Amino acid sequence: MKNSINIFSEKKSKEKISMVTCYDYSTAVLLNDTDIDSILVGDSLGMAFQGNDDTLSVTIDDIIYHTKAVKKGAKDKFIVSDMPFLSFQISPEETVKNAGRLIKESGAEAVKVEGGVEIIDEIKALVRAKIPVMGHLGLTPQSVNVFGGFKVQGRSLDNARKIIKDALLLQEAGAFAITLECIPEKLAKLITEKLEIPTIGIGSGKHTDGQVLVITDLIGVCQNFKPKFVKQFVNVGESIKIGVSSYIEEINNLKFPGESNVFSISDDTIEILKGEF
Image 1 (cartoon, helix red, strand yellow):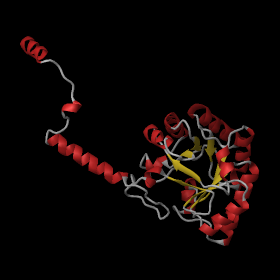
Image 2 (image 1 turned 90 degrees about the vertical axis):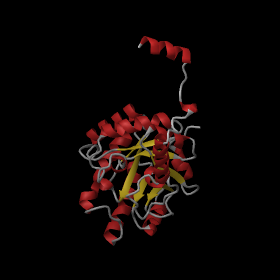
Image 3 (image 1 turned 120 degrees about the horizontal axis):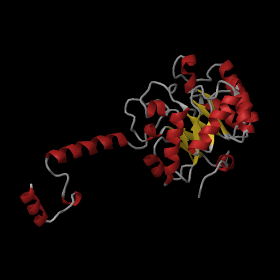
Image 4 (image 1 turned 45 degrees about the horizontal axis):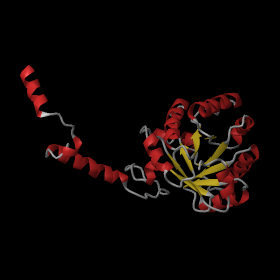
């Protein structure tokens, strides 16, 4: 059965919400056969898929392209797509225009935006336009240059207070859920208890209403980037290396292609062709 936005409110404080990023059709097909609640087409694709140092170069066209692919493969999952850097910070009008294009062209069912009080007008505009909005607080990767790197947020009293206030503002503005990234576990627990809408944690402990991980981190494809909060549940990266090494070996030993991998033609036809050429 197709998952809807209702799964977030229904599971709040009752059952954990599971979410994972995805950027391609083939992986989406696999995820569609699991019990994952929702898929995020994150601007993390800038790092995990494109190999960049941050997410800032990702465009709205990139997100649309990848969301369309994911949508085709994960027809039963609720799909949220990130609004990339400068696609929603300019004005409410520009925000609705970009989000509307993302929804209409890609098939995403909701958008995710980073920030708090500074983008409240934009969030309200999206909600008025009937576009579901997921918020994102704490370590917001699009603010990496402001933060001076990918650093834990909310440790100081002032910073923690701001994150709580922003969470309440996002809820009031109409966000249906909030991602909390890289904040102390006790702070994430406090925010989760204060909110009526669910929280989705990444690097924020176990007391949020749900969790999200980048798929390449979860399955061990990214070998050179292992944040503290990531748990690798399977090592697909090593399996790929082993598989490719076996492929190379069988090519060299003439084991591949084997009889089951080739197509036949009659010897008579070959003899005729030899005579003609």
